Length: 562
Image (cartoon, rainbow, N blue to C red):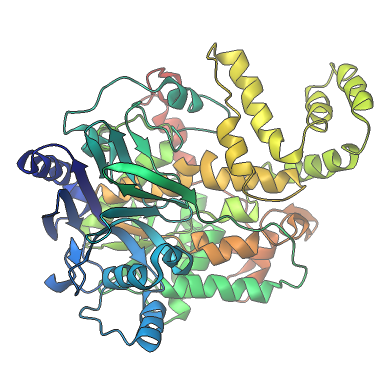
């Protein structure tokens, strides 16, 4: 992964180039293997490189096409770049000059234009300038693993990989976006969600979105992907195993060593096990949170005969990391595991590791959180009673004043499934704020991207794409890139996500061995790989055993400035 920057403005070129240099200087932790900029026409593009694939200078960026018409700056990895490369060779007889995924991405755009996004399997944020058409094409990956921060104002279009870096050039107003900040105090959000940032003048490009800039202004913006929730009863645990196996396999592609985060939980153990089955012997890293979690990690490491490095909590160091991360991110951080992750990645950096595989995302798509069973019951029950006339439901809601859960149930049954979560946000916002703003808009926007009549599905889709970004994509980018480390998350492969959401939730949450298990079909899919004491052990969140130690140092939840 890397850092990208660009300025297309009415400013003098020299000043514009200084802005890009300033951004790159601020983002240097994202990649110091090469730092370059280029001005084409009146646009300046810049890049911080963390060399992972094709380590040669030929793959440095900004990268110019052989015809000279196109230039790209790209942060991320295209995991299926070898397959795309072969497709382009065979179909268009194109001769590549590098072994990089950057060139494959650029050439994919040249031949497929905007439809190249449908072909990409990766974590990415990029900008491509077309010198002939005078347009800038920018896009972000489906789940938003890689950030894209931008501003469109009277002087032009500006973008970077980090809010702190972009704001540092000193031309943007410090006026805060009260709506974005307010979202971070509602229900499940522990961050300011896209498209908002702390500042009114700066935005984040949403996951699965692309924009086209012409004459220094955005002329088109669209969402290019969302999954289907039409259940496919033919999907088997073997099908699930196969797609996850391939997601791990293509993420093993690198010209540097690839390590793995190993908590001893189901998700990270599956990833570690598959890497070993593919013939790798990755170094594993685990944070010492409690003895039980560490013992699980040791069992998995011993099973696959891989070295396990144990990292330890250090109060003062984590406090320093917190301060550094908030400076980089440009906003406060409301999640303890982000700070623990920073400590973990700092230790990984000392071992000269550049790429780390993780188990992020599995809980959102396989319904692995502790409250999932209750949510499934709620989802089934509300589906049963929503057929009642609204007059009856209103009466039931009124007479349920003695039971909060029943009251909510009958209230939500009167609302269309896709609008239920948004209604909860709107209701809470009216109690907390006096803003004249519909706080259901953001939630409804994403809910309207999918079709399902099950509340549990809508809830987990919203958790994946927006609510839980702090523990899925932000945690995968911010603390890792602070130390120049790239994370790869096989469970965020769009093929895995699409298959997972086509599985009936009753196959994900059901009884086995006399107990109710979440993520059951995932556990069953890998019974051939992992022992039952790992697969069916109780869930523990990352850094769970450390949270009480850190609460006294970080007042995450009561900072109104966010």
